[in-house]
Image 1 (cartoon, rainbow, N blue to C red):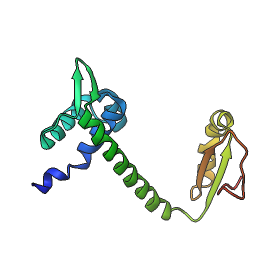
Image 2 (tube, rainbow, N blue to C red):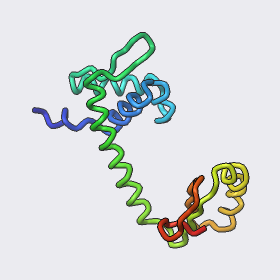
Image 3 (tube, rainbow, N blue to C red):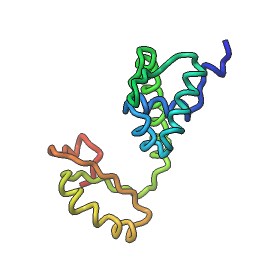
Image 4 (cartoon, rainbow, N blue to C red):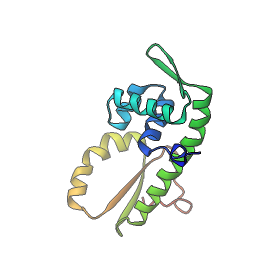
Length: 146
């Protein structure tokens, strides 16, 4: 077996995963900041590499085939683990100054977010983590400062 066939490129996997999740090449393209035809070509290249149809195409609509759903279940989890690992690495390099805030969604969206640019200008080295919460915050159980 050709090992290259067993390890598709990340761009092919991302195009497939987004297309399968959205059941749309157009929405996948928007998410990935690509054109619809680029996403479609990447999915076709993956299908050609695997020699398996991953989507059922019905006019302009797509849906994952049985093989596509099974592949999505595996690939989706693997990509989530890669994203989590990347976030952990980035978080380990986080600035020493960090403020973790919990806010009600409406307050955060309507009052706090419009003012954040001034806050960042005044405190450029501070990392601000916002958590939208609708329930009470247990400060002893969560890593929230205010």
